[in-house]
Length: 105
Image 1 (cartoon, rainbow, N blue to C red):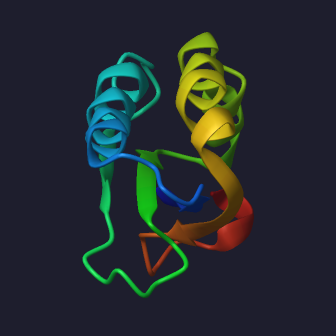
Image 2: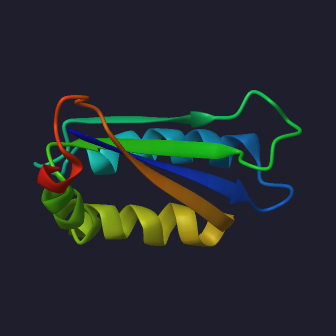
């Protein structure tokens, strides 16, 4: 299984209401994608951190992750919430099964 995590730097002065909407929307839109097994999202508790918001997607394989990235629901979420409110993002992928070789993910 692959866990895809995205950290976002949000624009200065973003309202708390907008951030809450981003958290809710990530779960609403991304869970509609059949390949997605789970979604987590939230805001950073540390106000000093450069990464204010994160969301993560869990899928079975890298191939399914590519399918998710091209899915209309994911693209709509990014277009409506990430692009207008974030000026930088950082993503990482993790293999969750320690016995599985990465080439088979």
